[in-house]
Amino acid sequence: MKSEQLFESAKRHLIGGGGAGGRYHPLLKHPVYLTRGKGSRFWDVDGKEYIDFFTGSGANFLGHDHPAITAAIRQALEVGVICNGETEYHARLADLIAEAVPCAEKTRFANSGTEATLGAIRIARAFTGKPKILKFEGHFHGMHEFLWWNCSAGVGTLRDDGTVAPLADSDGMPAALADLVVVVPFNDILAFEKAVTAHQGELAAVIVEPISYNQGCIPAQVEFLRQVRATCTRLGLVLIFDEVLSGFRMCRGGAQEYFGVTPDRCTLAKALGGGVPIAAVCGKTDVMSVLNPVGHTIMSGTYTGHLIAVMGAIACQTELAKPGFYGRLNGLADRLYAGIAEALRVTGVPGIVQGIGARFGLYLGVTEPVTNYRQAVRTNREMEVKFILGCVRRGLYLHDYGHTMHHGFSSQHTDADIDQSLHIIEDALRELKTE
Ligand SMILES: Cc1ncc(COP(=O)(O)O)c(C=O)c1O
Image (cartoon, rainbow, N blue to C red):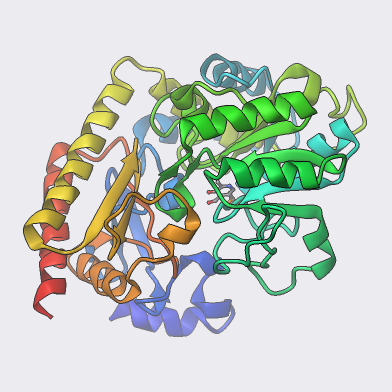
């Protein structure tokens, strides 16, 4: 097997045989080494073909090698590898974002979701002069020290002030920074109000994944989101929607359009560019005006808004704006999630599927709707492991994050791909009953 040989040789100079830790598949015990991606599929070095239900952690929203994105990248190369230089295309992309995303009066680019949330909270601290950020248990906002708490580290202790004791998601997180984060259970408005009261005068912002896709697919309850919005407005807290995954996923305006609740700021990445490395912090003009050169808050970088990424993202956004794009995508979503629910029913495997737009969670061993992280972690890990391996063996690539499963598809997936995937899913579920 070439994969195994490549794993051995890659390990010589790459930790774990991969350029990024997240690409390691803990169940396969190596990363999948790719040779090519096209449409809804990719191929590994052993020539095995997979339907892609990983989609580059949601970034390959338009599938692999989308002709419009590939052409735009070629065009960018002809302009020149413009690094740290401004062009007409940067403003064009910001216009497209403003047209689609309700809160995006102003945009500042970044290279990754992690960088975008880091910038977003710096802006909030500058705007309010306050140090603390409130986040929700189970929500992921990237890998920096200010927010990488209580995402996958397990369930923390509930405290009398409505908060959850901070748990670091990685080694190397300074304990002192736990004092700057206020963690609250998701969809629990009483806990939220208590926590806000307990930390009043110190909070700069509330950051939320309006759909907690990193725990499968846990939408905010709309009343909860509305009340969070109202409380932030009343107390002068900056409300940030982290839409790195939810942005553009089910409609052009992302979760803020879907729920009809507009934050002060949002972070975007992934489906913003359809696979090119780009992210953004967007927001209302007043909050964003703290950024340099208008204000004195710095957020910039050598590779920020690299032309290749900007032009790829313009192509992606132009595709999303085409009539019928979301009708087709959401039609596939409905068929897929109804099909998975039916597969659970006919095989008798306990589980529940929750999906919105092109991303979903499948909670095996859980039969009640999942509304927060505490419920999401009650899944049956043994079943998940067998199920993921059963699908991967049959040519449906599901990534393993070592905790709650979350998957998705792209706009290049077809009805036939969905049918084939549903067959594989049903077979893999049936195997759980027979073993
Ligand atoms: C909601 C959310 N925020 C932030 C990030 C971090 O983005 P990146 O991996 O581009 O740093 C992710 C990544 O999955 C995410 O899902």
